[in-house]
Amino acid sequence: MGSKSSIERDVAAVGRKAIDLHGAAPRMRVRVLGVDGTGNAMAGTKGGLLFFVDVERQKLLCIEPLQETNTEKVRRHVAKVFAEVRAEELRTDEHGVYEGIVSEERHRICLTHWRKSKGKRAWDLLQQAKRDDRLLEAQTMEELLKLLRLEPRPPTLPEELERLVRRYINARKGLPWKVNQLLQHVERTWEKVSSDSADSTNNATERIIGLTLKIRSKTMRGFKAKSKVLAHPYLSFYLRGEEGICDLRKVI
Image (cartoon, rainbow, N blue to C red):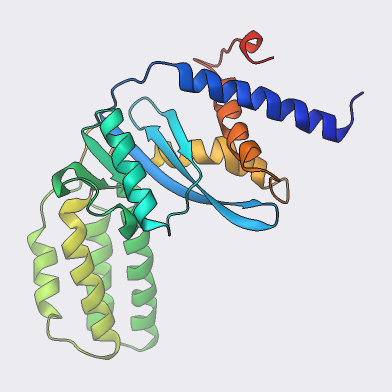
């Protein structure tokens, strides 16, 4: 039986072969390019990885060792991949680093992320309004939560939301000011959220991050080298294969 270090060495070697195989495959045209970043511990420091995914086919395209805080490099690399795969749409969360890379009509926000972030804020303000016995603000947040959950979601701004925005447009302090800020943010971003009939989320990207990297990362303190950080998700994705079948002879 081999030692832990030899097993780690062999897995890393197989992972590098998986990277080579992945890079040698012909680059397919992608309709929706999903992009998301994740942090990852490496040799005691915090690193970052940027995942690029074909949302429709739920396939990993590439991974770049970049943190979302490195604005210039992230924007440059996303623009490069977007052009290489001839994507029609960029799908991300609301992180400001992704703004302005492509034209507004080609950049769409993940519906799941948007609903979750706006819904949490509305729920928190609803609870505060109830504690403070602010009935109007509580009613407003309840109405907003209903609008956020609408199915099917209207692609254009609902009149009901415009009415709520006007109700608080002059609020400048306290709870009404917080409600005002949330309503205006929802109004500004409503039409930026994806309304794709096939899939309006970026869940495929987050799922690949979770299945190929995060599950492994939770069982260890961190990778010791950048090459090993990259080798693991590429190998994990390769092992999932096509319809659950992969050819191990190509990497072993």
